[in-house]
Length: 160
Image 1: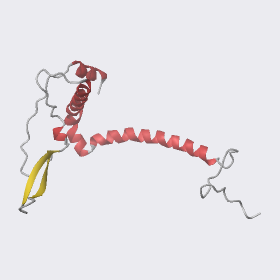
Image 2: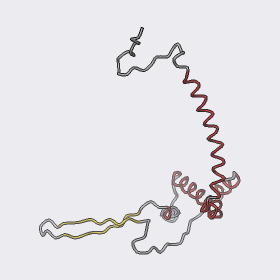
Image 3: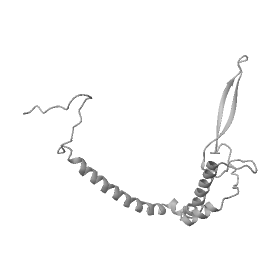
Image 4: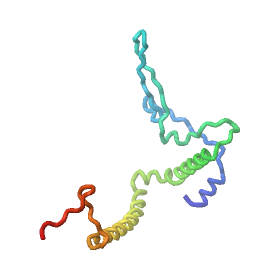
């Protein structure tokens, strides 16, 4: 994101966030998990099943703001999290959604692969330099070969 966009976002604190509700088909809601618990009555021995729905972490819950009382001030950590979430949502809206078809067809990823190839070439050069340093261990006067077992000196050459 450009620095100017970040500055504008940080300067303009949002007062609230509204979202539409999603009408999920029965049994297809990915934002909740249904737990079925078996309960047995101690004296009668009857069995009943209790179902409980638990909220799950999901992309669809990402934009739901935390509940707050009117006029209540949020602490600094919560404000920082809300600002970060707002920036992420802004990036999704401005960069990902307009290019969604390109991401779906793989055309947007081809540009990213070109950037990764340049980074991989730099990493390979670093690895080559490290291998060159590791090859001369036997000629190094401070080189001590690893022993096969703890506490034992390395095996001596018996063919002399």
